[in-house]
Amino acid sequence: MRDMWVCNVLESLELEYRREEDWCGGNDKLGSTAETDHVSPLINKHLEQKEAFLKACTLARRNAEVFLKYIHRNNVSMPGVATHNRSTESQVKAILSELLQRENRVLHFWTMKKRRLDQCQQYVLFERHAKQAWKRTGSHSTASSSLDVLPGIPAIPMQCYRLCLS
Image (cartoon, rainbow, N blue to C red; front, side, top):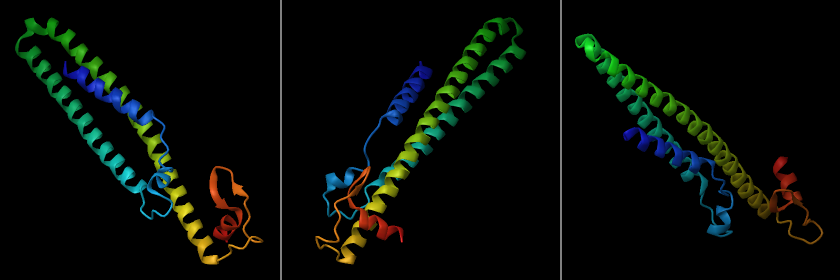
């Protein structure tokens, strides 16, 4: 019963980490003048979730190992029950194997989500610095403000991008 609960939790985590979201668009939701970094709290929460997840997986494995030791001790002290205990032992080992596979899948998707959050944070910081550099240059004349934008980076003029690279 408990193993099914753990499997359900692992499945929901896998689905959550697979889900695509636009964390970089959070600035639009906060307003264009928002100076707060909305991605850092998401990354911190993500790291906390991973730590809690790994602790829970370790606890589940330790409990299973203790149970397997109990079965082995029981087999030594009561040899007549060994046949029944072998089937229980194989069930526990099968559950442990499934949990390990699911744990690895969840960690894979966790890593992918972490990478996307890091990229989003880099984008948000780049956008913020580019806008600040654009404002500092005072180049708002029609001759110098090109409306060309970078693909995938709307609302950042090409001149500002070049300025940030130098």
